[in-house]
Length: 309
Picture 1 (spheres, rainbow, N blue to C red):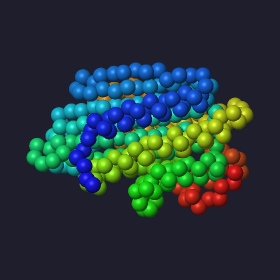
Picture 2: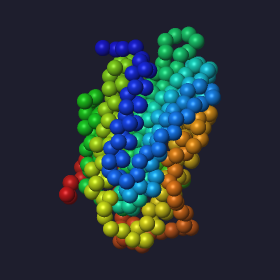
Picture 3: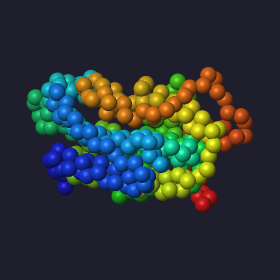
């Protein structure tokens, strides 16, 4: 049954999601704890940034909650909705990026968000968005398969076409066009989601949000104690450059945050603490570094790959 948009219920869920994810990540790390930084936005709203750094497992990670509002929708949010230009709006979400210390543990990103605008004439307009994606430095098919299996299970209650559509959307969105290269091995991405049934749409967003840590934690546990050396570390720092390039050039969330007067420290907390760019670096053929781009960063159907574990 269709329901009226309930922004209060969404906000309560998002705050709880932030707390649960931080608890699970702290337990994984074992040493470091998230610092909590509550902030207010002069134009309206605020948020809670939670950052972990210099941990045993996580070199840097941020799990940010924000709830911001304004009197007129920013340009980045009205490109496909010109009728909402000038409408009062609210945006809330949880966005996170986790940069591990061990190069064999992939970086992960997740985001779930809710927008609602009230045009001067007519009913409020809402939509959900979000998803998560995985960015390995050294690839393991077992990790890619388990990641996508969990993503598919989160989508299955909402129809058999949801996972294939969100998976393809993720592959398309997280693509560095100037490099002609995917950022990682994908996952889920959706935006502008509104079927007219708020209850069902909210349930989909919760299913995606709740499944992120279930997808990521087993991968971290499998890889976090693997031995590595300076070669792997330098390659990790080099590949982190791709992450920075995407976030600063293409990411819609970053653009929206900056255009809407968001808090710069929170918007840019996704950037890694250390990174390097090497001129025209090309991995030697046949190495694990070359296999990352030749075998893993290809937009594959990971559910069609046999699990080798």
